[in-house]
Length: 413
Ligand SMILES: Cc1ncc(COP(=O)(O)O)c(C=O)c1O
Image 1 (cartoon, rainbow, N blue to C red):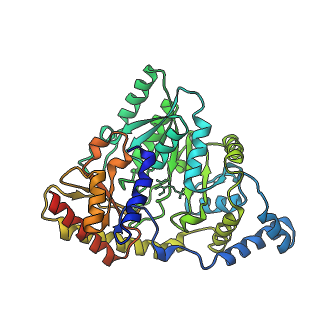
Image 2: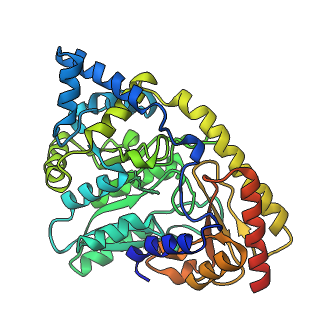
């Protein structure tokens, strides 16, 4: 199965077994999907535009309803949010508002991968929406195998970037130019790791040496259950290498489709806006106004907003930990990680957990899991790993799902 077919496959399984508990998708909990205050958020943003432009509320509302600038209309608001919460100081002209992280990834790749010999590197396994997207563009994506960067038996992982240098040199010998590296450094999807400060600094130094730009994909860093905060790569970047990409899909709701990209400089931001004018014209100004008004109401910071959400997800994470311990503590060959944030657990299973097992487990034990091999360009290394998302269900359902999963593993071991 190609990476592009993974999402279809999982959707089909979920549709075929609608009563199965699905740990497959990284979906926010229904309790945190914000739909009741949209009109108020839009009114707040419309007031803001009216004041900024010295026009009436009705005229501002009309302007918002029209086509808008490709770079976006909430850029000054995102600028303040980034300065307050992420310690990222950028001019608003260096921000492009996108249709989630996904479009931001596309824009960065279209800007960087121009020559046929250019390629993107992705840590493997990684979010399939990156590698499958690069393939769909007809561009080259090369795996940077995680098991060559770190010992995958040891958690937390400790990265050594020497293999990155080797890989770039090997590609050069084949006349392939590595232009950028994709990484999701905080509470990674699918493996839930988080890079340490030292690993971030070393990565930046090596990428500078290798003339590699970095795409920092950051949908999960706000979901922290301990004081595990690390500075973003963008925040540490003294070389002008990083495209920082963020999203409100998980903090507000995925349906709003609002994300942003902060490229290495303003010239690149203009280039991205030009590309965007040809891919989606502009990001929905209706959605932008919802997010803009919400952030104004939050005084340009999500620090308070995230407190109850993180408390909730931390309880769910703990519930999964408890269920895993209860069900698997006596199995020597079943291991799992201890995430301190994000949405995911990773379980090492006693046998290869294939596509067929996904369907059989959904059918027989009413639980849907995500094989980590689905995220990998060298799947055999990851055949025994499964990703379980704890974000969507309350603790009792999490317990039921993990127990069902353990029954399936016991029957097939
Ligand atoms: C690592 C990663 N990047 C990007 C995305 C896409 O996010 P968005 O909804 O902002 O497009 C996801 C979605 O789950 C993700 O896990």
